[in-house]
Length: 449
Ligand code: MV4
Image 1 (cartoon, rainbow, N blue to C red):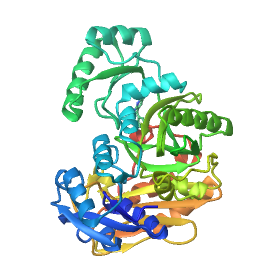
Image 2: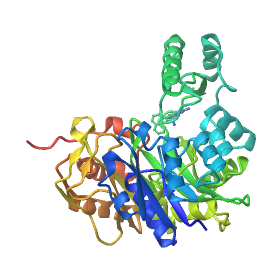
Image 3: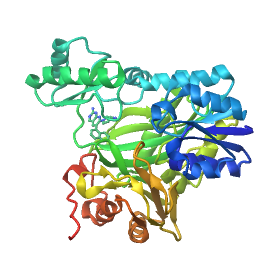
Image 4: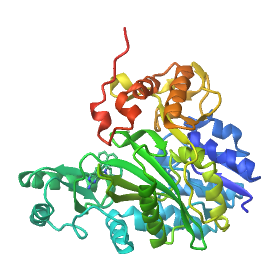
């Protein structure tokens, strides 16, 4: 087993990883930018190394600085968390060259899923359902129009280097293809330095349901059930839950089997997530695979009662997984508490937290790096806490979440708590009746002056 793990991340996930390492008897090293001196991950790690100024490019994204911190602390492994360098194949490669274990998949596995056309092609060969579309890259507008006519409108143009919605254009008719093609290429080129575009049939009002998988170095792959992630705003998830209110035993079996095939197709080693679009008739299509631990891994932990970070570390250390699939035993919902003003277009609201009282009680979990007196720096993402509730049924879970949100007090900055309070009361949400476009029509009631 590893003796010392360096955590190449910040915030709640750095703290989350430190907790599991402590429980496993592994020493921890935090790295931090000068904006994060007062963060709890710095305080709770066994050692901490300052790696630069607030700018991510000069700290959490700097491979030379992180490798220097590994060297001076004599760490034997790196946990990348999510975001930052977690899906950077070059970083995983540098780790291997230095003889440092990257806690995650191999550079090849990351690359295969990072390029969306390669990923889709791999899925087709593995027998995983995908959305009908172009066979690989599109050459020019003429070909785009021809393909769109064959597929039938609406269609969607996607960047092969994309993900998370960037470089994506929805097209409803032939006379819109040219503009969409030009702007998608431009956006993809600026964002990813890769203007490769492919085309797909647009799935109308889909749900986003993802399957958590785990694979080990012996070729075993299992699934850990699904997460419902359709409550999103501009490709940012706000609420996740497990099980999905749309799931059936039969669909879970089919999607679980497909997700395992996806993992097996690339000999996946580590924990990962296979994202699917699911239409109203419960047809499902591979969308992307995330080769990292995700923010919402916590809802899976709550419903199957397993520590996924511990699973990751064990897999990286060459320990076999049990190989069986897990069904949810409970219901869990996560609300992301962001320092944003939900009544002003979710504008970021960094600054000093003057008062902080976390929700507590039976079935309530809060993962956070903040506390009263902490100043939220403006340089990073705005998530300050994850509030996770679990109960025997979805109904009870929503009621518990309402209770927990009522006692969650943050003063000094605006937060998304009022948004979640209103969402939990929404009739369609309570019925499980929603899709990825739900928040576009959700009416948030402004606070009384
Ligand atoms: C789609 C789609 C409908 N049809 N592909 C959005 C992010 C990127 N991962 C893929 N996305 C979508 N791809 C086809 N063929 C709808 C979306 C989509 C979406 C997907 C999941 C969650 C929220 C979304 C919001 C808008 C669009």
